[in-house]
Length: 94
Image (cartoon, rainbow, N blue to C red; front, side, top):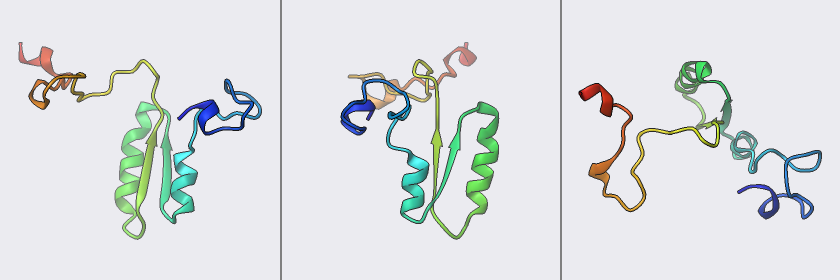
């Protein structure tokens, strides 16, 4: 979902004519009448969730922008069954 496939034909990397990523989920949500919230910092997560919960009238889409290399937990490693899920709390049990 980056650059060339969904952007203008000349898109090969972010720049003036190419967005950092596509689609813009906040605008996509708004185009369907939902509320869109973008979170770019970890300390804004609680506010975004609170804001979404308070909105009882419309659906809410929260887009979390994370670093490409960030670990997102929980995760099921490729090819593994769900009971081998990594939660990120494995070290707490020791």
